[in-house]
Amino acid sequence: MKTISPKIILALFSFVVAFSVSGITYFYSNSVRFSFYAFTISLSTSLVMLFFVNVFIVKKITTLINTVKKFRTQSDDVSLNNEFRSNEMSLLHSEIFAWAEERKNEIERLKKLEVYRKEFLGNVSHELKTPIFNIQGYVLTLLDGGLEDETINRDYLQRAEKSIDRMITIIDDLEAISQLETGELQIEPERFDIVALAKDVIEAQELKATNKGIILTVQNDEKPIFVFADRFRIRQVIVNLIVNSIKYGKQNGETKIRIYDMGDNVSVEVVDNGLGIEDKHLPRLFERFYRVDKSRSREQGGTGLGLAIVKHIIEAHNQTINVMSTVGVGTVFSFTLKKSN
Image 1 (tube, rainbow, N blue to C red):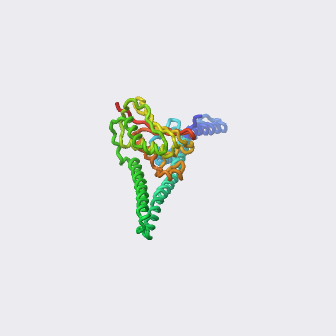
Image 2: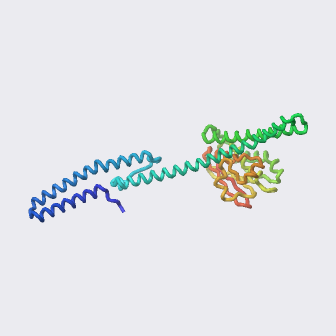
Image 3: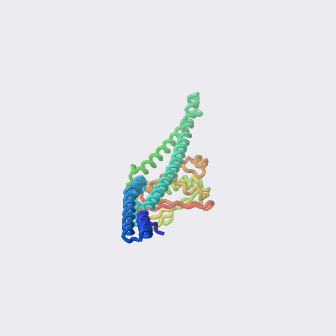
């Protein structure tokens, strides 16, 4: 139902008052002329009052509306229809309500960012603390006399080196994510055969897979399929996905790379028949440091940054990556790339 403007209500009220005063005057004076004068004076007075109401109240409301709009985060997207233009009170209510909703959404977003920031800092601290404490323990042991003990000195130095390598890996991964997010790490696309790249990754990871009894294969490899992307970064994506499937796959399992020509794009899938991932974990799987099984992940030596890097690389190509998983059946990671003829 359309709302009547306050100015129209006041105008109607002015006519009602004028007719009432005119009728009362005619009743007591029985004079049409006096009745007409009373009507004219009453109507003029009411219209003057309406003018001052418009100047001092309605314009003040309009100013308030414009002030509220300036503070709205999406004020450029706000358009006023004729119904609201004719009713300043309704417009003011609409603007204040929209402003309040935006402030509420902004506060909720900031709260989520604060929680994410705390989790992120806590995860970074924990990931770096472990190798630092390991290095400290090895060095203190050596300083306390272990350096002269040939049975442990080399072993402890090698362990310290592994912890240092782990710290370097974490820092390199964090730097890569930061550069991808800020655009500092530029994607250098080129034309290459994605099938040949997939086979190359399989060959490089075959020994690691064999140690766990996992079979790696590339399907749909009868002919080359060319894409236009950053070869080095896409190799990094496939390696991360294959290594994950080996680390968290079941003994004597299987991992396949399936490649499909989809016209303008090429779809790449990394499929395994491992333990699968519960639905509750899937929405957060690409977050930094997020782990489905934290203790098991750290035992495997992962930093928890691999899938976050994968997501950023694919998004830097203006493409998407998705994951589907069923507990006890397996997991499918799929992403698209721009096809090159």
